[in-house]
Length: 196
Image 1 (cartoon, helix red, strand yellow):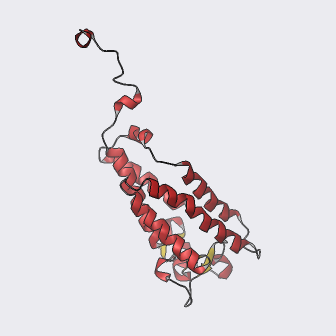
Image 2: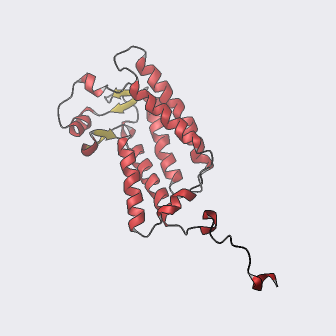
Image 3: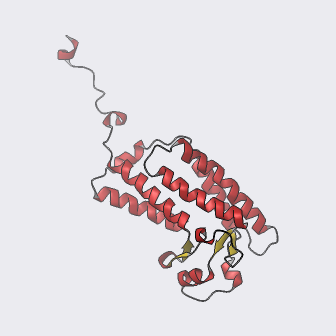
């Protein structure tokens, strides 16, 4: 998920360069936003599960699938915000391919390009939630098939939509008019002219 953090930083810098106000980030209001932390924390936990245990894979996949529930709830509650539905579509695409294949399929060739070296089966399955993409994979076009060499990772089409949606949301929030009253300005008492 390091690459997603990079997307967030790039989106912020791009929005600021286009006239956005960093102060606007403090005004972002998302309904049920703590559920985002719950969902991403659940996904992060799977990275710590041992990949060589018989129970690891099924446990990781179950946690990943369940993690999409709070994430998609946040998307639905905030669907009117620019970029949120697009990000939600990306999440849903990832959810579908993981549920259909019992894990996120990863294309070996793409993983080798991202890693810059040849990989064996253990390398490809280093994350307990992954399965190898093969002729039996369902909806392979939604799998991890896009190598990101700078981050040594492989992402999916759903990840791309998630990143674009996140970028659109952050850009919009940075460049919308600042509501100064929320920051305690403009709260002065009326002058004599208004009290007469």
